[in-house]
Image (tube, rainbow, N blue to C red; front, side, top):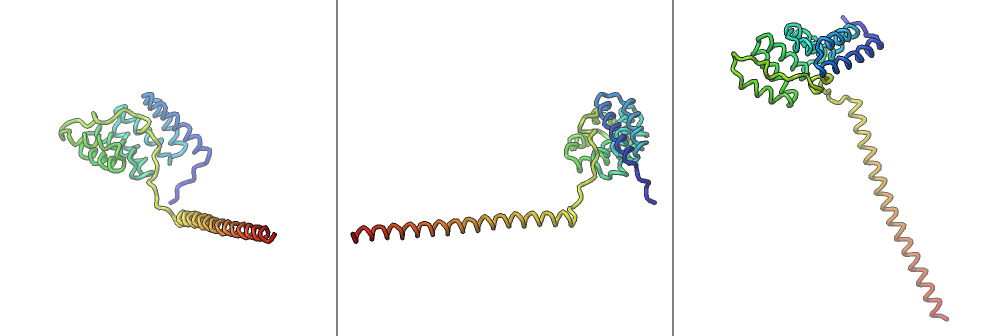
Length: 207
């Protein structure tokens, strides 16, 4: 069953609230960030960024089960996103699910090399130890907007690229022809000058 269309005004208001929530996360005002992110998801349930901000707020407030739920809600909208997987790994670590947290962090590091040092650090921690120590404070990088994976270029993109290459090739050919024409024109000028000079010399010698 198709999901209901979200009104454009709701999308715009949701995005504005999400931006405000981002600033609050950086300021470590997690409760206020959660409140605004929640309003954003009410306006636009497909706002993956807002769901992730709720997850971050939950994680930093110790509500790991709720964070796990919200991270999964975001991943349903934008699968295989490193930032969302990071929030999920954080929640799993807080829930005491070390193995699952490590697996999520591994996927995260494969998608985004910036998280590789944390994954390698997690590998050095004993299984019985607490993984929460490796998770960073929210930063502009961690709260960036989740984006879907890049898709391969479609037929239209391939056509436009080919057209651009063809146009570029046409320009190069035209420049080449212009160069040849210029060279031919220069040669004709030189020949005309030589003939004129020869005629002038012959006229003087007859006198």
